[in-house]
Length: 438
Image 1 (cartoon, rainbow, N blue to C red):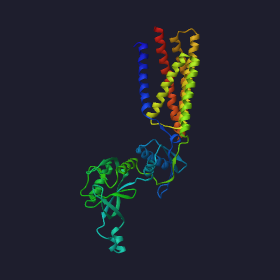
Image 2 (image 1 turned 120 degrees about the horizontal axis):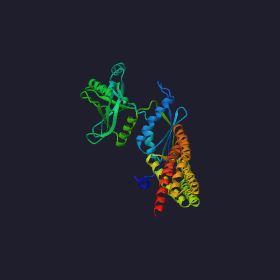
Image 3 (image 1 turned 135 degrees about the vertical axis):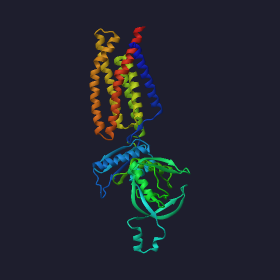
C-alpha cells in the first residue's frame, strides 16, 4: 500500500476516534470526587468475636465484602480504604441523604443467611411448667415468626422452635431477584452441588414441618415443607418491598462479613471547593491551555497550530477515557491531568527543536519531519516510560487521593505519547505532503 494512502487511512481512523470521544464528552458527565461535589463519609470499625480476632486479613475481608455491596448498589464509585488496624473509611461522592441511609443499611448488616430445621409450637407453652417447657424446647430456640400470605399480607404471628442449621450463605451458587406467582418480589436461589444435597436431605427430614430461613438471626420466611425438594433451587418470599429484595440480593451475592462492624462516624460532606472556586479553577485551566497554545503558535507558527490541533484531540481522548473507565475526578486527579498536558507539550517541543536542526542541515520538509520524529523517539519514550513506572507504583501502593492522581496521570501520559508520536506526526506528514504535491 502507498505510504501516503496508509497515512491518510490511519488519520481518518484517528478522526473517527476523536469524533466518538467528543460524543462521549458531550453526552456523559464525568464523576467528581468528594472534594469537588461532596457526598457521604462513613467510618466503620471491625469488632472482635469469641472466635475471630480482627487482624489485617480479616480487615481486608471486610473491605472486599463492603466493596461488593456498595458497587452492587450502583450509585457511584466509592473510595474504601483501611484506617489503622480496625477502622475502614468509605467515601461515596454525590450520595444523597436517602442513598446515604441505604448505604448504611447495606454495609452494616452481617448478611449471615441460615436455613434451620424447625417445628411449630402446637399450643400455648405458658400452660406448661418450666421443666415441661424446657424439655419440649430441648436444645432448640423459641422464636416468633410473622406469617404472610402470597400477596404479602400478615396472616398471623406464631411461635416456632428453631433447631440445627442445615445450610448457610456459603452453600449458595446464584442469587437473583425475581417475582412470585402474584408478582410479589422474591429472591431466587440456586445451591452449589453440595448445598443441593444438604437441601434435599433437610427437606426430606422436614416433611410436614417448617424450614426456617434466617438473615442475621431474623426469621424472614418459614415455609412448610410438603415434600423433599431436589434440583438445588429455592425461593425466599415474605413481606419485603422491591428495594428490600434488591438489597437482600446484593448482600447475599457479596457474602457475609467475617466479623461484626460498628458505625463510628456518619457525615454528609460538602465539597472542599465551593462552586465558585471550582468554576474559577476550570477557567484558570482553560486560560493556561490558551496561553500554552499561544506560546506554541508564537514559537513554531504553523507547526504550533498543528500541535494545538493534536492537543485538542489529546484532551478529548483523555476526558473520554476517564468517563469510560468510570474514574472519579478529584483535586489530585486534576493535578495529574495538568502534569500530563505539560508532558504532552514538552514532547512536541522536543520534536520541533529537532525538526529545526534537520531543516538547518538542508533536508527537505518531509524528510526532516521523519528524521526529527525518529531521533526524538528515544528521548520521549525514556521520559514517559520512567513516569509510567513511577505512576504504577503510586497506583499499586497508594490509596485514595494518591491513587486518583496516579490513574489520571497514567492515562494522560499514555495518551500524550500517542498524541505526540502518532497524531502530530500524521498531521504534519499529511499536511506537508499535500502542500508539496501542489
